[in-house]
Length: 377
Image 1 (cartoon, rainbow, N blue to C red):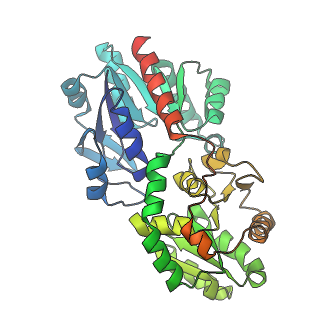
Image 2: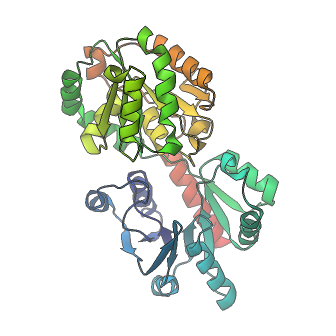
Image 3: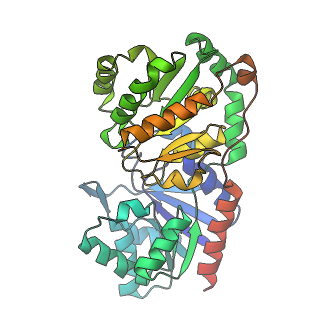
């Protein structure tokens, strides 16, 4: 079975899934950007890890964040796939769909979408009609959550094949990286004198949509009660300067660490050192960092606006909060810190058990099951 996947760009959390697909079918990935738009990754390192055929389709223009690419038809003809997978309800998706309809091609078409119901409530009527029209002609959907599948059934009467693929890496591969980060973790723990302290961890872009200002404000209300706690913000973005200034104004600068953007062993080390992970976004299609934090054994305080909230079971592996309610975020931070043991030498030597409730193999099986069903339908 030949599967052609048009994908925006290669991100770390896609590598394991793409490689796993190669064990079940013949995939080719066509990236429509050299790197992710919102966050840049070391593409040389990532592509070396990719074990499937891939290429780039860069001809065309970007308008308002949308990628209009030429040469899509040539890619389809050249590869001659049984199934084409496109990303979101995008210009690339429309191009593939129109080509199928006009030329009466028998190739099957599946859409891979990161939508979650929180993103759909205020959708413009024109886009909603477009979505409805497209859904009538595609053969299946790949979604992050069962919740979103139920939304499509209820609001768009979509009853075709669906695969639920949470944004999770291969747990064995990811936890091996955590183990390999041991020397770097010990170095960081020593540099920041972390033994006996707790680490509130955030990983991601320092941008408005992540609402780290709310996190800093909530943390400032309880920081004096938890002097041996550090709020560590891993990432970079246009708000780094203003967030640092805010921490000074809130008089918590001594308990806030800005590491800048990290990858590899250093990022893995912070995942091991983190006591609790916090994602306060007001908009988040899913939030792959939540999967990674749970795999590292960290409880997560997750925004109700993130698709990854479906991975959180209140009281078991974290809590789901409305970050627009300062008291709610503050209360969750306080409760979590009260129940979180400080970092010890034992903590540094032993990898915590995973708190992730979904499996990577389950995601792969769901993906392959969808492809087989669509192919034979």
